[in-house]
Image (cartoon, rainbow, N blue to C red; front, side):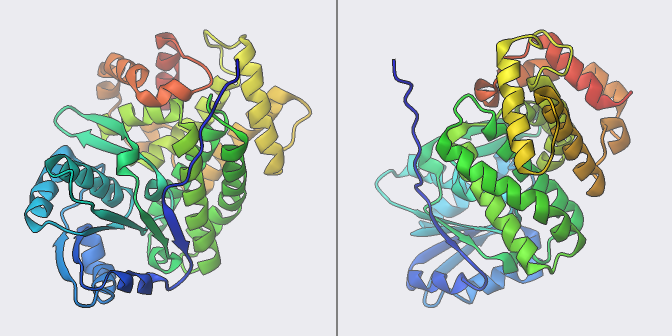
Length: 384
């Protein structure tokens, strides 16, 4: 029986410095801009508004980190009353995720009206400008919920590296490692293909070489552009191939302890590589899938200049390379070093395990962990 996969690109991607003038194509439209307070205070919002001649514009600037459900409801009410022709999502992953969720909600209210969604990312990492994913958080429950539908894909992505030059180093690090996690999880996904591999390979080439440069000097436009492209390409890849165990755990732990998504992914990634490759002493360590996955990790490692005479050694060295990159970016190796309350962490262990096992991202992980495997990973990450 033939195993059929599907790959498509539904978002028009426009990239390069100084391309915001393209927004003038929407002259005379009703424009809703969804953004946050940082974009307002930095002047980025005014740069957008200046390129919307003869437009009726409203701004919803209450976007909050991790896309809280209450913010989506408030934004939907604001935009429903305004009735936009176009929504512009200006900001990082939270702004884009919020805009995607709001447009989906508006379609539920009035499915007859077409609303164009333009994503203008100002960080390099989430890839949200080209994905059919959005992650909504419920702060009261301490949970994150990934939603998936082609209906929430942006119509246009504008990638202007000028907009990311002012991103501070710690956010550059966190978002950049998010892009690397997207790439590596898509590469070993059960739905990986020649098409997704091509995007991952280029994305990781760019990210491993350019992220340290962008972190060290935010005004390095070439490094910023490379990371913007890497983020988008990794987004294209995981949109088709799916993600894995690192993201399943990140949603659980990050939601409970309010850790930035990219940072918790970065901390988890070396451990997940070792688990998937059978280096951890786990319930699946001797399975054939571990060897297949280790070969994949070893292959992408060689492409990045990470060598080893053995397959599992290659996977181990890739995990070590990720750990070294984290250290270079001042990302702690353990939750204890991050300052998380270890007593509270231990009390929530069972809930974290069940949340991770129920996460939709786990569906495309190359191995299916048992609850004891999740427990071991959670305890290793703690660093006690």
